[in-house]
Structure formats: structure tokens, C-alpha cells
Amino acid sequence: MSKWPLVPLASAIQYRKEFVQIDDLSSYKRCRVQLHAQGIVLRDSVPGAEIKTKKQQVCKAGDFLVAEIDAKVGGFGIVPEGLDQAIVSSHYFLFEVNEKVLNRRFLDFFIRTPAFHEQVAAQGSTNYAAIRPNDVLGYKLPLPPLAEQRRIVARIESLAAKIEEARSLRIQAAQEAEMLMASEERRVWPDSVLSKARTLESVTAYLARGRQSEQGESDHFLIKTQHVQQGHYVPSMMCLAAHIAQKVQPDAFVQPGDILIACSAAGCLGRVARFRDEGRVASTDTHVAIARANSALVDGDYLYSYLRGAQGQHQLRSRERGDWQREKISFRLTELNLNDLRQVPVPIPPLAEQRRIVADLDGLQAKVDVIKNLQSETAAELAALLPSILDKAFKGEL
Image 1: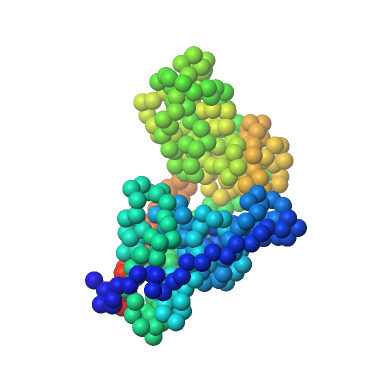
Image 2: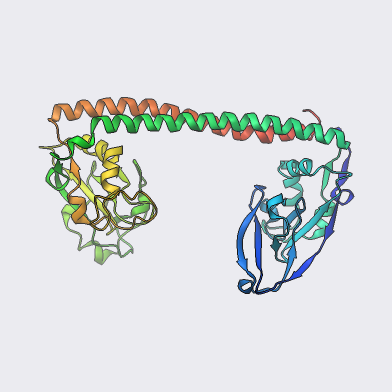
């Protein structure tokens, strides 16, 4: 319970409406609220001719902006300086803050607390029930003197900065670990070994993209690009139509240990995963290739380690529509043709050396995973710190 009096927001903010007539020849900044109290950001800048509703509201820096519909899921925030004079539709409510009574940053922090969200959620009966201006004015907040508000804001900002610094250090450590892994993979498979390397086609017993994709009811599962995450297969719940499943040749059934390669879709091309879903009949659609290692030439674990590593990923992602010498690791990637996939170079040392390489890289990957897991755990802990700090701050315990 706060040691300060709870007062309605109406005692510190005032609802205001200021509309502007849109001029087709002028340009306007439009802003939007991010949900879960993540603030106000620029939506876009557009010519007036593109704005259909010619009567829009004008924001002022420091205004408290509330979305009529999305308030119950955190659709509110303080308008930043960079969005002064930006426009919003009549489905938003603007409130001017009386700075003689309420510090804007104090309000900005308070609206991120569970105590405030609970008040907003209490209005209406559904998550998206519309909020009215009088509802907002009736919400209550603890209101200490201005000097105390400023002290609390300074204290929160200081602690928040330390949290962000710790988060950045953890992220940096995880990124450096990933770079270490990539550097080791490049050392194991440098560019110099590629000129004498074999091709992916020559070291696989089966290499093909799927052919059937019509969905329906059957016991034959369909693997698509979304099921091929980098280094991780997501079991598919999609099925082929029964009459289509009958057309799939036995070789095209995915076998445990097969390597799945995403061959199309922006941002997905080149991702590899290992199929481990034993006991299910499955095949891929036209956007996913199956690479099945020829065990007489290449260890399956070795081939997978190579293709998901830095050098293998470079070789896969740099082959788009036949232009395989140009690296294009970006969202422009659209298609990995089967002919180019066949020509991906794969260095093949003796089988014993392949297994040693896999063991060494797996050992290093395990250490990298420990660092990444620690970063994830720490990130969750750090994310929980700020809400805890805000809770204490508005109870007068900070």
C-alpha cells in the first residue's frame, strides 16, 4: 500500500481535443501506441492526400495518449518530443499533464505498473472494451510532492540504466560466444579447402526437394519451411491430402537423421535442421529439400555440422537462382534452386577425422549453449527487475 494519498488522474491531467483539417499538399507525421505500455512511436510520414479522414487530432510532446480500444492491453503512453505535432485519429484520447502537480516521467513510470493496468482492465467486460475519457480521468495514482516525484524518477532511471547495462553485457557475451563458434568453424573449413571439395550431390544418397503440398486428411505429415528452424526441427501437424500422399515415392519419405534444408521464403533460405521425428510418415513440400548422407563417404553428423556452420551457411545462402558466387545474406533471398544446391562444396576428410571434428565442435557448441542459456535466464531475471522496482517506487519503498 502506498504511503501517499491516492488521487484521481483528473486532479493532474486534463482531457483536450485539438483537431486539424488535413491539407492534401502538406505532409504529416502519424504516431501509434505500442501495446503493453511500450510507449508511443512514429507510425509513418505521409502526404495529406493519402489520409482519408480529413479531420485529425494533433499531439503535443508530453501529452498522455490513450487508445480507445487498445487501452486494456497497454495501449497508452507519453508523447515523446520527436512526435510533437504528430496526428492521430479520433479513436485516441489526449490528456495534457499539469506539470505544477505531476511530473511527466513520474506518470510515464506509473502507467507501466500492474497497479495502473489493473485499473484499466477493470473497465468493461472484455479485453477490448472501449475506454472513455472519463474512465481515464477516474484512474488513481499515488501523488507525493513534486520534489519527491523527481527524486523517485531519478532513482528509477539510475536503476533502469544499470539493468540495461547488465542486459547489454549479457547480450554481448552471447554474441561473442557465437562469433567464437563461427570462427572455429571457419578455421576447420577455410575457403582454401573448397576448391578440391566434393559436391553435396556426390556425398548424399538422396538430395531432392519435395513435390507434393496439397493438404488434407491423412496419416502422412507435411514439412514446410516454418518447421525448419536453424538447428531445430519443429514437428509438423500438417498432413497431405490422402490422394496426394499416395503419389509420394518411398525415397522422398523423410528418414530419422535426414538433413532438412529450407530452399525458399524470405529470411528462411539456407536454414538447416535434423529430422528426428521417428515413427511418423512425412515428406517435404517444394520449399524444403532433403539431404540424406551417403554413409560410405560422409558421417551424417559431420555433414549436418558443416551445413549449419558458418562456412556451410555461407555456401547455401550465397546460391540464389544460379548466382552462387555472390553472397546475399538478407531478406532478398527467395529461392535455392536444386541445381545450385547440388553444387554446394563439401570438404570430405577421412571418416575418422570427420568424427573427431564433430566431437570437437560439439564440445565447443555445448560451452556456447551454456553461455546462451545463462544469458536467457539472466535476461528474464533482469526483465523482472524493473517491474519490481516500479512497484516499490510507488509504494514509497524506493
